[in-house]
Image (cartoon, rainbow, N blue to C red):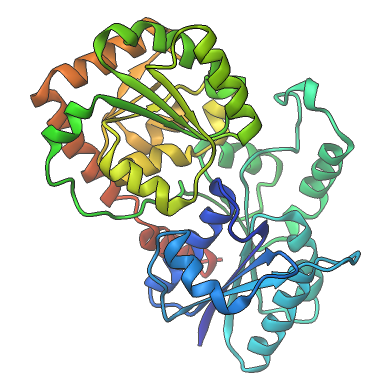
Length: 387
């Protein structure tokens, strides 16, 4: 029997995209008809009996009979219990003569898996990269750490031993192939969920609410939010920022009040995926992606927020960056990353023109259908077993 095991060191029930993306990857294989195990960390007191309800109530997904989620309680140890539990399960499947594809975005897991592969040689081990550390000249020197140097060493000496590398962008794939021309490499964006089409696009347009999802870092466009709110405040348009941590949100909401922007600019800390998708389905009019023009944003990332907006058929106003255009193609309003006036104009044009708004929404729905998680899973399977 063919099986997939996806391993994450992230915490179960963690707001934000990291655990969620691992779960959606695993669910994509299950929906494609392949029995799949997803290993993830949990708090020491976590009750595994509630996992299925968490999938429904926290992640907003329907549990799949071919997907088994293993929430591994943490204990004080030099070894990660989640990796050890995954290895034990892999050995059991291997003894049953199952054909096993193992995937992870964790370098700790990759090292463990490659050691295991010495005794279980037919394992297929893939790594999914969300950055690039082999050469670090593009990285912000303010955030230098020895952990970064350790990651660089792992990428140079451990990564080439994997059976394959999944990249998120074509440029990222080219960078890795320059260093490792013999390593099988593929570029695949992350996937889209599928939601019922909005029954009333006009009602959604008239809400006039622009939404951003994600962290609140400078390179994500933080300062642009305040400048943009100033230009939108006289046009009955609200800007809702969902992301960041509670202490950040409190500080930024206070700043909005001080600058007399609280009526138009609202901040909410990270919320669980189910609540987020309910909000996008019922409250949002436009998805905003004001990524700044950095090397990472331009060439290495696959913005999850873009995929969320596509899944709900929301018109998108975004920075003009290759990483975004690769996902959305021509189905968005593109702006220079620091041109606040252009962002404001694109938003007003969409919200003030019903025909344009409806046409853009139709295009984003169509694009989402080409980026379904099940299709990504099939591409990974084809890639893994072609080498």
